[in-house]
Amino acid sequence: MVEWTDFERSTIVDIFSKINHDIVGPAVLSRCLIVYPWTQRYFSKFGNLYNAAAIMGNPNVAKHGKVILQSLEKAVKNMDNIKGTYAELSVMHFEKLHVDPDNFKLLADCLTIVVAAQFGKAFTGEVQAAFQKFLAVVVSSLGRQYH
Amino acid sequence: MSLTEKDKATVKALWGKISKSSDAIGADALGRMLVVYPQTKTYFTHWSDLSPNSAPVKNHGKNVMSGVALAVSKIDDLTAGLLDLSEQHAFTLRVDPANFKILSHCILVVLAIMFPKEFTPEVHVAMDKFFCGVSLALSEKYR
Image (tube, each protein chain N blue to C red):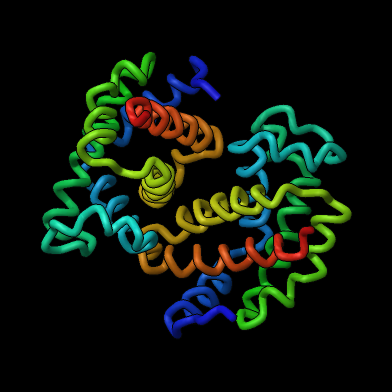
């Protein structure tokens, strides 16, 4: 059972209330596919991923980035049971999508960078620590049902 | 995952824009690291004050970034260029190399904060590769 301080709870809720899914979602996924190109292996049906410009302009990438952010909202709304909230998603990522769970951390790092860029100086060390703790719980929950 | 000519050019171009802020970058990255990854504090028990913007943190941030500046200047052969620093980290400081990744990540976060327009995905991948190369070169003499 994860223990959240009041600061951590309010920080996570605050960050997610201030990010625009339609912008941040596509930005995070495209950054991940560019910075860690081997992650493209899971998106062979998405069309043109040949270079950074193609990735950033790809409508399938944009659409899927939004799906990911919307899913993160579920974790924000259920911070006391992220593991339970993501049980089905974890099964799906293992049995259907066959995603190596190391990739979850790569996406999480890209999200940290995108959020840092948006928040600037307000993204202090304490805020970063809370955000990364939340993402670590998400990452762990997504890998939980692998066997 | 070695640096292509394009990567090296990207790193040098970014460094040209950010180097005058290197003290601030170093201080923020180091201060942030000590907060986000408390286990890294174990290497600095000899400091009176581990809070961000304290004198020891600011001073050491400068040291770290002068190492980064050296790495940029020796980007064509990081292993050879960082040999002395590698010996220092291996035999004197004995920093677990896992921490190089941690500090690299914090530097990238600071770059995103301070230079959001410049830190595009293409610049991000070049800098990530560069810091991987620096970390590898620093680990060279460990065993």
